[in-house]
Length: 51
Image (tube, one colour):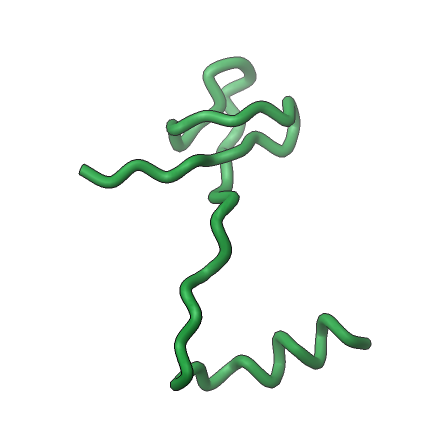
């Protein structure tokens, strides 16, 4: 089984669970998405970042 480090936006604590153990809010992955040279949407993300 593969575990990902996750973070709660409300409490700012790190966990491995999908919901925060402290406030039960959904957590999000702190790892960036994998890079792919075939990414069709890269130009949109880059344009959004450098606006």
